[in-house]
Image (cartoon, rainbow, N blue to C red):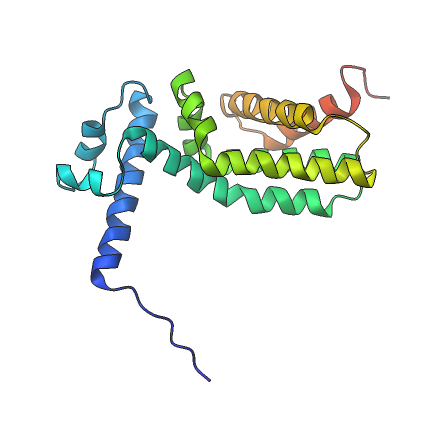
Length: 201
């Protein structure tokens, strides 16, 4: 039996295209001007849309930025969770998380650069619904790993904060280097968490 998949009408296709055009323009303008200096007018000028069209989709530049971050988070969250779920020991849990994140940052560097351009953006980024959901997934996976004995008894909230902070800061440093080396970044972060500052045996 053939199931017919409904094809979006022209109006729906236009709405999707307009929203994507606004997000693409915002990504470019945020990268060029920084979040603080960017205005809604700057974003609209970077599209072929009428000025009023923007407000049919977003109320402010903050909303566009959150949409950018939500899209990015939705792309990486399933991959991060899959790595943590398949981990059989503490090394695989920590290394898998960092390797997956840094590989993604290297591939998605435009959005990551925008997210880290200044402190205003950092504040908005943390308010993104999907980013916060990703942090919560990490916390839940850590809690499950602690309860199952995969990780030692520790505070899931503190470990979540530590892994997120290290991931974002090292990710930014990684992108500032030439060549970009996600493997080296992941190895450093993993060693830091597993061995502290003690030299490797």
